[in-house]
Each structure stands twice: as C-alpha cells, then as structure tokens.
Image (tube, rainbow, N blue to C red; front, top):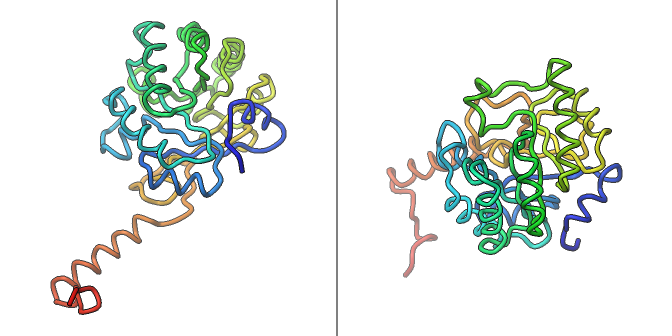
Length: 265
C-alpha cells in the first residue's frame, strides 16, 4: 500500500468504502495504520476519551498540535487529518487559516476538519486558498453541544434535512474534499451522499455513506459504558486491561512477582 492522498480519497467515492479511525498517540497510530485504515483523524474527541472532559470544548490548539505531532510519527500510509478545535476557526477566517497552517507546518497533518455551518463556508474557502485540504463536518456538531441542547440526532424533520443537503452542496462548492455526517437518519445520509460528488464519511449515519469513522477507544472497547447506538465494539480492551492489572496487584502482594525469571543475577 502506498501513501493515501486527497485525490485517492476522492477517487474512492462509489468505488471503495473509506475507513477512518481516530488516534491520539504514536503507538495507536502505528497499529491502525498497519491495520489498513485510509484516514487517521486526530479528533478533538481527545477531550472526552483522553482528558476525561465532559465534552470537546476545552481542547486547545496547542493540545491538538501536540497530539497530532505524536500521531504523525506512527503513520506510514494513511492520510492524516486533524480536527480544528473550538475557537480555532470561529472568530475569523484569518485565525482559521493561521491555525490550519500550524497543523500542516508543525505536525505533519495533511488536511484539517472543521465542524461546519453556513457561517463557515467562507472559512473553508479561505483555508483552501492557502492550499490546505479541508474536510467538512455536518449533522451533530459536538462543539455546538450547548446550542444543540445535547448530543441529539439531527435532520429528522424534512426542513432540517433539506438544509443539511444544501449545506453539504455548499461545502463541496467551497472546495472541501469530503464531509463527515454525524448522527443523522440513514435515509438522509443516503440523499446527501448521492447529492454531492465528494465522499461522505458517516458516524451514526447508516451504511450508505462513502465511508465510516469510529473513535478508536470506542472501537476496541476501552471507553466506559454507555456508548452511543452507532458504536460497535470489536474488542473488550477495558476488561482485558482491568484483569491484567488486578493479576499484577495480586502477584505483587503475594510475592509471586517478580520471580527469578523476571530478576537479574
């Protein structure tokens, strides 16, 4: 497998499903890269799954820069995309371009993702003008959790769905190379996917998207319950780690570890 580039990702629409997984450190990035994912996303979800925060709003640019730099060290083939954190692009297009540029210059990221409304179409255009690929993100936008009144399904009403279809088209016209569809009805996701020529990547948006993304901690069973409906656990790492640690505690306390096998003469 060679390096996955933006043109390759775009060419996968209608031809091959795109797989995107989050990562926040070099070892995890190396694992998912070797597993064959197409895109590694350094998500601002690190606020939840790494920092233990109730949402993503407290994540800073410097923290995203740090984690993206770590992840880049573990990637050989996958495309590396970095989330624009809260208030890194909302205040002005100039700030957005500056911060997107930091990702490219300082971390090895190859594109940025930003949660998108009609207010940020010109922001996408400005970042693209600087030569930086952009991934849009519509539907549930975690950075707007307070405005949305929680983590709720979006686009259930016909009028809301039509607005999301129109927004996806605007995102495409602004120059984005793909768009994430989060927590929307699968029939709406299918309509959006058919309405635009760039790939859609779903999370809680059904099987008709051009690709799928999951948070790595959710995927491997490291996150605490309860999990969103759209999460499928492919392993039970949390249980494995708990058992291993309990076994270590017991062996240290009863003198079984370290044995001569794990000691130097």
